[in-house]
Length: 177
Image 1 (cartoon, one colour):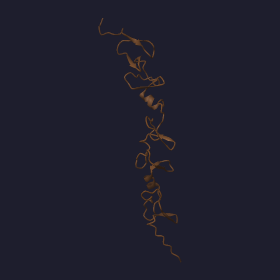
Image 2 (tube, one colour):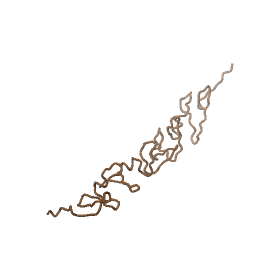
Image 3 (cartoon, one colour):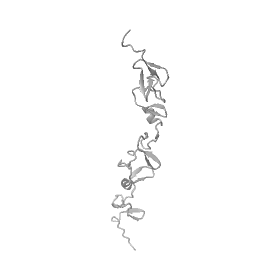
Image 4 (cartoon, helix red, strand yellow):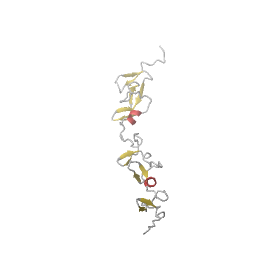
C-alpha cells in the first residue's frame, strides 16, 4: 500500500452534513468546526467558501457578495447617491442615507459632511457658495450674479421694472415730464 495514501484518516464529523471527514485536503475548519469542502457553502447562492472570505449572521454562512449586496448585512443602509451598501458611517440628510464622501455639492464635488448646504427645486444638493452662484439673480446691467457680501448670507439688490441690479450697477434716473 502507498504510504502517502491517507483516505482512511478520520478527522471528525462535518458540521454541515454530520458525515465522517476522512482524508487530507477534502475538508476545512471554520468557526471552530470541521466541514467537507463541498458542505462549507453560502446559504444564499451555495458557492463553495473553502479558502474564501465569508460572513456569518445568526448562524447562517454567507459569501462576501451575498453578505454585502443582498441586504443581509446588519446595517442594510443603501447610499442614496451611489446605490451601494453603507458599511461604516452613515450620513443622514434630507431623510436619506449617504456615504459621507457621496453627499457632496453637484458643482464643486466638495463633501458636505457637517457643512451647510442648499437644495434646488430639482433636489440637487449644493454648497452654499455654489448655490448662490447658480441660483442667484443676475444683474441686468453687468450680467454677474448678485451674491451676498463676504461673511453675509443675504444679498442686496435693486429691482426695477422686474429686472435685478447690483446697487452699484443701478442707474435709476427717472425722467419726469
